[in-house]
Length: 211
Image (cartoon, rainbow, N blue to C red; front, side):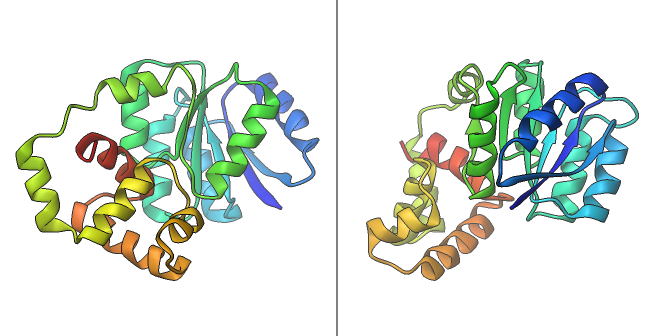
């Protein structure tokens, strides 16, 4: 069962979303927050697996709440669900630890699927969001490639490339004939070497520098 926390200041939307997601047998709504401060407090208290986070909320917005929750509980996956697709919100949310960014017009069955994938460790970007992110990625320079070769071993570079293509730890392990534990160890070292917080940021880094 995937435990969900809903954070949105629009009561009717939040209640309607709770009703729709409650129809999914593997999803459980454990709490609802109406602002960023409440979402941080409930994340501390309830320890949900996934948080659906709006970006514009009173008292504390979703970006600041995402940053605080990610710092306190890096195992909690945060999926932004909002009506706003401005670049500023998208990049700030991803930079502070969001695992994905979807718009509220996402059909409920697609949202449920995205929740499951985020819980499994994948990143999720809506169809209008992904082009914004990839448009900001610059072609890798020779200096960047040289820096990568100094920071990471050949095996770690391969793992990072596969991570950037959206593969899970299990899929990477199967592709490279490694154990999942070995892949996890590689990714832990990659995050440390690159100075990034999580696999989402590592994937974005890979898409920028390893194409």
